[in-house]
Length: 252
Length: 160
Image (cartoon, rainbow over all chains, first blue to last red; front, top):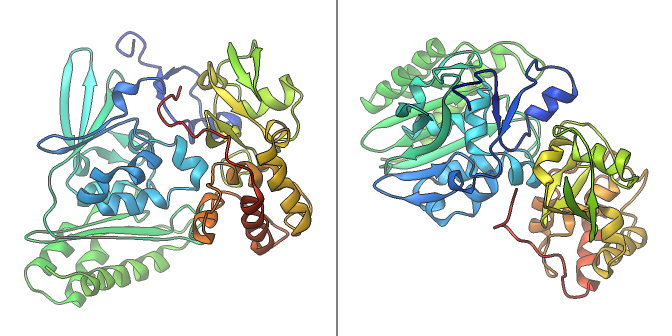
């Protein structure tokens, strides 16, 4: 259907789509409802952890597999809205919606997650870090569906922090996910048009450099703006603080 | 479309992207469910869909076909809902009242002996501008204590 009608927007939990429709902030009028596709809902441990695109945040929080393998994803899922949103919102939706403030995106970037895209002509895999091309833009073609997320075993400590106005029900001012093991990976949300994998800052830390040098590298890697939730200056400062906190609270 | 609302089978003819909130209030006359923000921030429109709490302003009609929806009216007709309602009255859990139906619906899936932390987590998606929440948490805690064995079935398998 998507191949024949590229204007169709796939919908799942609708926690963003219905807001756009109700307040007239979206032009989309043609939808294809995926909510009933239980095939896309499962969470399975194959060689990699495979989370179906329709897995809700509640599914993720409740999954012993995700808790064990990617606890930072569980931590992020707990901070998505409240129970009502967690019960409906899906991981695939969070990715497809492509908001710079998508709560799970820094976690998926830091985890080296791979997005599984499927169309009538086949399947392809794109690392999350290469999935977005700009503000709310991605490499997903109109005839492609996000069917799953795959996460290979993660070595090392996982760390997650979301800074918002309120613990629950707040859209983030800034958030950071980090992995500290053989490799160091740091990803941030709400600091640029799309999620940022801070490879330079991570390389400084991994190479035994000082936190101050890593903070200086991070400063160049993000481009936060002033908006109704926060200011660019505040976000730069908190990003630096979060990086220091990540390094202080984890060990190799 | 066919669905069950508060135990009664209903046949409704509505556009597929109509908000469940509007289906309930406009088409079914069930005005106990309140609209607060219309964007999933406040939880005032919380209902149960197949036993799971959801903001009815964010659920399209197409996704409740064949589902069992329970609103505050349905909850109030059952002992487990009445117990919570009475607790809100006794413990000052309601002031202006606009958030109260949503608070009660969000609390319904909780187990009888739920801890304060579990109550806070369940109600994290519900905003109140009057009470400061303490009396709401107290009300829910008291309501859950007096409640008869739970009848709200929390099924996670069957979701449309």
